[in-house]
Length: 210
Image 1 (cartoon, helix red, strand yellow):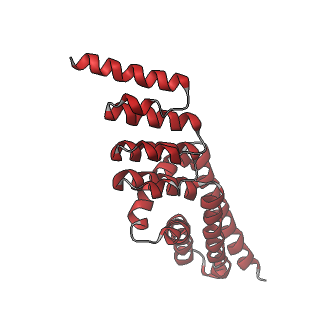
Image 2 (cartoon, rainbow, N blue to C red):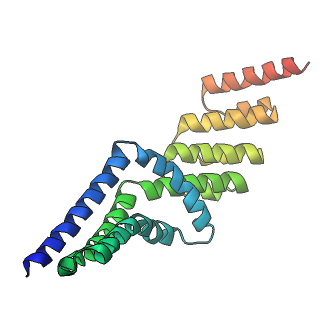
């Protein structure tokens, strides 16, 4: 291998290393990862409605993150020394590596699951469909989803579908009973504190209306 080719490979590797370092710095030090986690649900809604969540997250997004490096490497290819351009071509292999790294990042850091949970929560709420709530992996978000749907449908039976969070179920039942202004529903709550709180809140609401 010619020395100038080695220089080209080294140059591409350094560019790749700096690009990844900057990417990680932005994600973890400047909390861009948090911003990204809130950005992706909006992205998922746009594409998921078309029925392609897998393509959206494991093809489109990695391409978005990989393209800047690909373009940078191409600029170096065009403007760089022609004698070490063969080495710079290794940058395209690094682009594939970056693409795969993005897939690992999106999958194993829970970004995909977080976005899908958020999407299913909003889908369940917008369409009053508890079936979407069953798809949510996070127990707390699932509880909120069932509670929202139960309130929308004014159906306390939906609260019984919250099986992994007793407190969440009691709060859901109390919310629906108060929404319907029906003390009899309070007696369905299998917790004295929530049951009494439910009855008290309805009585207070009724007194305020007089």
